[in-house]
Image (tube, rainbow, N blue to C red; front, side, top):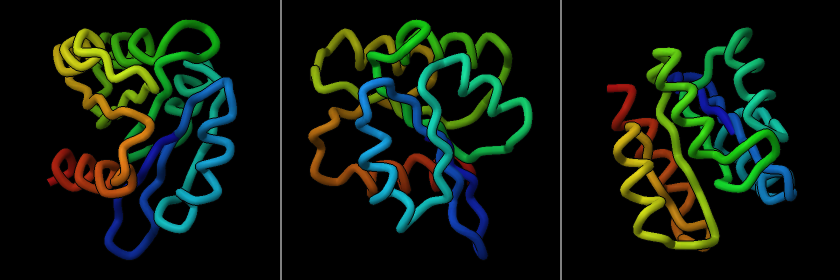
Length: 126
C-alpha cells in the first residue's frame, strides 16, 4: 500500500502482499486512505515511477522477494518514502533490520494498525 498526505485529500497508501491480506484490508483502509494495491516489489517500484505516495505498507512475504528486500531497494534508489513492514511473525530480527534501513516494523495483528500508519505519515512528512 502507498499513502499520499494532503490536508484536503485522503492519504495515498500503497500495499504489497501476494496472499490477499492487503486486498482484504484495503477495503477497510479506503475509509482513511487512497489505496494502491500491488502484488509484489516489482509492482510497487513501477507504481513509484508514476505516482507520488506518502507511505508504503508491505507484507514481509510477497512475490519477487520479501518486503525487506523492497525496503532495501527503495532506499538504495534514494526514495525517502515512509515504509511500514508487516509480518505475522513478531520477530526481533525483522524489527532491527527494518529500523536499520529506515523503516518501521509492525505485527499484522496490532490492534491499532490505522493509528500506526497515520503516525508514520505524520512523523515522516512534517
